[in-house]
Length: 486
Image (cartoon, rainbow, N blue to C red):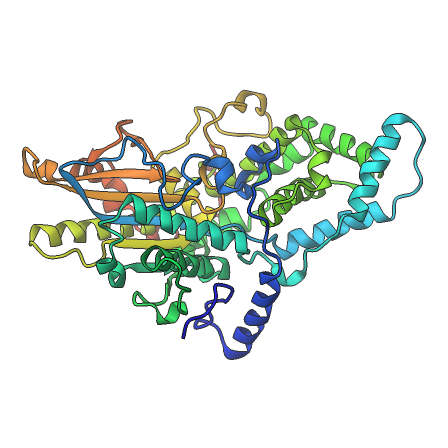
């Protein structure tokens, strides 16, 4: 039975929950955003809430005819396997963020009369506009994928199918392998990606239910895609450790954030004592959510200027750095299992090619989170600044490499492409690899070259591949310590 695109993947939930999900989906289908993109000067600074097209403007104009990175191998080297890690598409705010937004909205509605000076009048006008701006977020949204997020995935599927036609051939469709986090935004992202492939294979035809598609449902594997939830050392020393994010908390009370706090309080005509860094950050992200989800520039975007946005971006990056990046060694070492899984796929494909067998899984798609990708990229040595990000060196890091919004925006993707090169001079050169981040070739961290012999890449990461065992890395030591702080 063919169905329209506004429906959820319900096979993995209980019947009652599935019914609720369907009702939720019907509501969502009435919230489709306009097709014309709206741009804000703040767009490059939203961190992990950044739209894919703002962080990566190159490949999106026509998904059926994407721009090909000139560094991609071609000629006698043929792609034989693609392993992709994909962050879910654009999502709604979480319930926690929605509660904070309600708190801020309540402050604006309860504000008292203000003075008559020009600046006060200007602030009063903006404050009134914000108080009257519809607060349309509801608790059920809680981080769920939005229609724009489904569009992110469908368009990514169309672009990848066009860039790698031999891998995404109709004959290979039944051999696609999809793995996902259990979070609905990831499960739904995988389903939307498959819808995009259906559109590629059957232009103009509505897709069937994902459960009825030839390649089957995405398989949930949280130990792989949410490895951080299964690492006791990370959970104890970072996630549940009140002091692990010291630099985040210190920056919130530091001069850069306090200046913004005072400025926003004056703009909104509310007492500065009623505001805090968390409310300021959720106000900033509300601009990003309205922009990404509904395609509108809300009055919240007028509260901040670019200098404010840069400070708030740094606050977000500090959290990602200390919780998912280089701040603590366990952040990246907890992703060893995922890294090894990628190379096991590549190894198997090479073994099958050497035996003149068809590659059993030419395309492996794994749907996860920013928290899945950032630790893995850190494990591989990418986007590491000479000095760690701290609460006290914001100005020194104005041109930092670790900018989460440029690395892992919504729908971000890290791809390993394995090539078989027929005219190789020796067996070692027969199999080569390229990495792509957000559809652009990513030079290898160890060589800065855009292509690597597969054996050389394995040799460079042999410590991780051979000696990084999750059971040992994540084992909690008798003495709790975060002494590996940089």
